[in-house]
Length: 242
Image 1 (tube, rainbow, N blue to C red):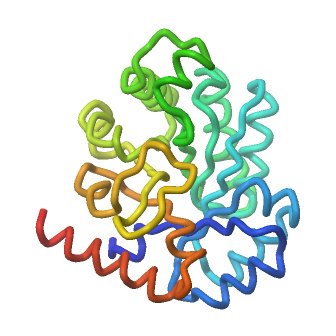
Image 2 (image 1 turned 180 degrees about the horizontal axis):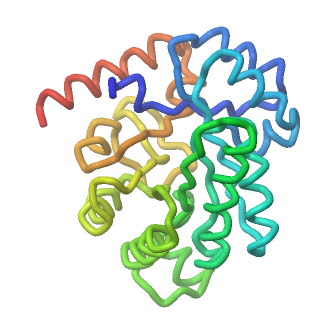
C-alpha cells in the first residue's frame, strides 16, 4: 500500500453537512472513519454517501453487547459494504465468533465483501494507572492488551486496534496476517491532545502497524491538505529508511 492508503482520517464532525464539506476538501483521502457522533447524527446515510464516492469505510462504533445483539449489529453493518468494524474484545469469545459469522452473512446477502472485524484491546485514552486503579484489572498494560488481541485472534477476528506502543509486541505474537490498526498516532509537529500513548506515524509503521488513524493533525490543521501531504511524505521517507 502507498502511505496515503494506510492513513484513515476520522470524520469526527457533528453532522452530514460538515462531513460532506470535509470529504470535498480532502478528496485525496481514500479511507475514512465514521465514529459515534456522526453516525448517531446521520445514521447510515453517511455510509451510503461514502460508498457513492468509492471510499473505504472504517465503522468505529465499538460494539459491545451480548452475543445475539452484537451479531445483529455486525450483520447490519456488513450490508452497507463497510471495510472495518470495531467491537470490544471484552464482549467475550462467544460473542466475537458469532459476530464474525453474522458479518459474513450480512455481506453475502448484499453481495458485498465481508468487512474485517477488529477488536478494541484498550482505549488509547487509558493508561496503566487507569487500568489498575479505575478498572481494577491486575495485569500490566502490555500483558492485558496482548491477551485481548490473542482472544480476538482465537475468535476468528481479522485484527485489533491498539496503541502504536504495543504494535511490535502484537505483531510478534499474532503474526503477519493479523491486522493492526493504530489510533494515538501524532506527527512530531502536532499536539498530542487527549491521546496518552502516542507514537509518530513513521515509527508506528516501522513497528508493524497496518493502518494509522490520524485525525486532528490533519482535520484541525490550518491547511489540511498540506498536513495530509506532509504526513504522507514523512511516511514515504520513513519507509525508505527502514
